[in-house]
Image (cartoon, rainbow, N blue to C red):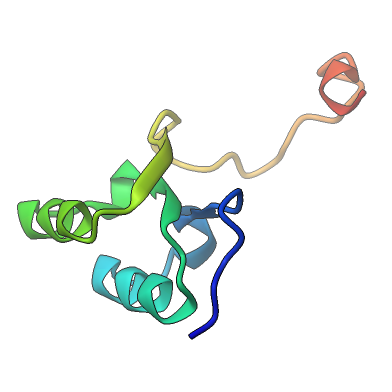
Length: 85
């Protein structure tokens, strides 16, 4: 079995097209025990229950955002470049 470094966490955003069951199988196969939970992927109570039963460390919860992704991102100049410094 492969083991992930204890300080490494995987975001569920990185497997957006996968189901929660597919995420959990992947985490188990690679020995991943720390995840960033994407609340939008928890579509029904069974998903939430399966995630809880896996006893993973949820290092953060990814669930704050707009209903859709912006079609065009503002330029770094428009954001004052402070985000890239």
